[in-house]
Amino acid sequence: MEPLDRSTIWPYEGGEPGAFYYQRYAHPTGVAAERALGELEGGSALLFPSGSGAITSLVLALLEPGQTIAHAEGAYYGTALLFEELSRWGIRHVEFDQTGPPPDGADLIWLEAPSNPFLTMPDFEAAAAAPGRVVVDSTAATPVYLRPLERGADFAVHSATKYLGGHSDVLIGAVVARAVEDAERLRNFRGRTGIVAAPDPCWLLLRSLKTLPVRMERITANAETLVQKLQAHPAVEVVRYPGFGGLLSFDVADPHKVETSLRAIKNATSLGGTESVLESRARWEGDRVPAGLLRLSVGLEDPDELWADLEQALS
Ligand SMILES: *Cc1c(COP(=O)(O)O)cnc(C)c1O
Image (cartoon, rainbow, N blue to C red; front, side, top):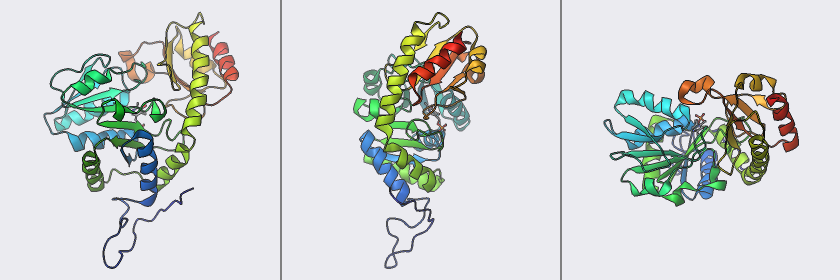
């Protein structure tokens, strides 16, 4: 395993700064983790203190006041709240149905693949054909199932807190740029604003990336099993699943009853960890989602035990 170097400073070499001299600009653990993620995505990766920090940095580095983000409707609620916050600086945002073409006049097209919690997939070709720059938040897909830069995106974004970190023990975010110039622009912005991931979270990410494909394989197999059984259950109204990964949602008449009846599956927020978690999203998103919608992030447990727990909670 690569060493964890917590130094904030490194001596100059022969009176000149070397590759590392002050942690805010670059540190060896971060560079190692960025290289590993960049290889998985086929681009230049940069790490930030959270997914939201990555999104904030990307938007502020790319856009000017008066410009517009066209944002996939039904995508991660936190991103909509973040764009609302940035509107005070004159950055506008409009929502659109990402399964079709983006609206005219968008300077930045923000897709989510698959969207959280509706699990829709974007029309990549329509977005790439539009004049605006294209960002894909592929947190729920991971590079195991989707490489957005090969589908016409300029940037892939991750809440690496989720599947990439994978153990519910690290808050971290990433932007992966297709163009080296875009990565340089963002790297300069990051160094100046200080919105940068520290060595410890980068080290945990690096550790986790080593098991990403095998975790995603097991998580997908578990999710497929549960989706089939949920679809056949009389108490379940609709099941949303894109066909890969561990995120799914389904609707029931009494979501609170299911949340509080679970024993093995944790009633908690977030997604992408080794342990399955489920929650009602109306708690956070109000009438933006169906009142009975439950979001389930499937973990690495025994699928028979997961289904036994869901079945007793549904009954
Ligand atoms: C969690 C999440 C984010 C925000 O990431 P944080 O690491 O919590 O800041 C962004 N996009 C998606 C799709 C997410 O699930």
